[in-house]
Amino acid sequence: MIVDELLDLITKQRAHLENLKLSRVCVGICYTAAMIENGYVGLCHTPMEDIGHPVGGPKRHFHGVKALETAQLAKSLNMIERAVGVAMLNALSQCVMDIGGRERQFGVDVSDAIEVEEDDSVAVVGYIRPLVGKLRAKAREVHVFERDPQLRGDALPDTFVESILPKADVVVISGASLVNGTIDRLLELSKKAKFVAVAGPTAGMLPEPLFERGVNLVAGVRAKGSEVLEAVAEGKAFRGFKELVEKYVMKKD
Figure 1 (cartoon, rainbow, N blue to C red):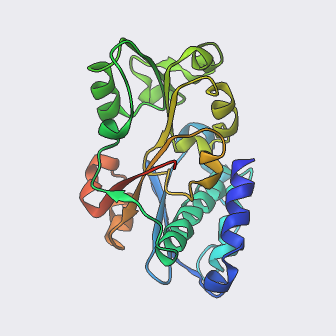
Figure 2 (cartoon, rainbow, N blue to C red):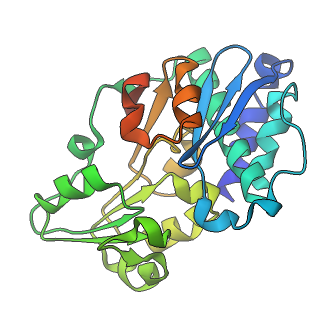
């Protein structure tokens, strides 16, 4: 599974990461943020639609725990712990990419990087509203799927992806699919698409496992500093803290 491969890749960088600890964590109603003591911050969609009653909260303390240990929570069946784990996985990924000099194209809007033609059928999993609006102006049709009923609007439930994704020319998948555990199946369903992108603030992970599964583009964000945790704590959606992060895209070679 993708999350296991990501954790293996991070663990291979143990020499650089072994002694790093989680210094701050915030589970907001829109996003979860985790910061390593070296200042790197990772973001993750908070899966409120899957958390349920607060009685199902985390079973452990986070602060002061080793960053590598915290990242392992990306496999937890407790959704709050899982969100913290994915956020930490993204923070460590950003750190590793900087250490290794991984090329990212900063300042590029994902809508400009997605290769779509006017006769294409596009499927977007996760209602990324600004992106959906731009794709609708370019493509013949755009099917949008959203898991959370409160965010769904005119989108379809994500249970319909099984019948639509295999027929789509272009597929865009929200990084939130990593935290809700659907990303592997979504990419399997998208094998026939000519262009596949994984995008959003939760898509800050190392891209190799995605590229190996046919993804052409990964579009994520890198936090500029710790201020983004304050915005997450205030329950802000992405538009409320977009100035505190740098957007980037990475394309498969």
